[in-house]
Image (cartoon, rainbow, N blue to C red):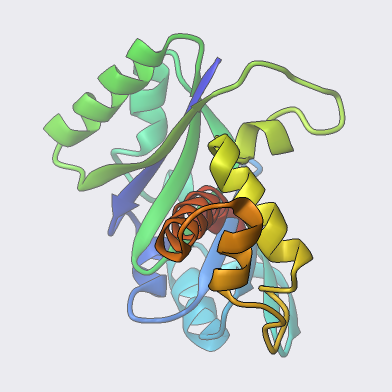
Length: 217
């Protein structure tokens, strides 16, 4: 099984509502209505967009979040939805849909990676501004975490990268304030300081790239 995350710019009312803001919206569709979870501020602006687009049935508002149950499902009000293209290529949409910075992010599953590629090309041909944020192969499924496991999220680090990162952590490099230097880490690993710093940068870059989607969700 293969997964891809598509980012579609300016796709729909909820994407537009987040443009120019730090707001993030998660959407679960229930056919007759939607459940929305809004964080990151701009809740009043998001609320106004939702009311205009589909209406609001219920809401729960706190200083740092907004939960809405809409009066209608957004799919009934917007045409040319991504679901049409997913069905055409035997792909499955994984909820929730995520909206941020004027775009919609969709996690899509397919048994054959060629179906994901065909779906992506079809979306481009239809005029969507779409990019692929990440892809991965799902090898195992468990009942408690069917599609998100550490093995599926964590990147592959080289042996040197793992060793350097572990020593840096043990020596207190990531404490505030730092309790060691890259020179000391390099001595422990047995390499030049610049080499140790390169190992750290590459390891950190891989970890951040792998986790940023979930941190910002």
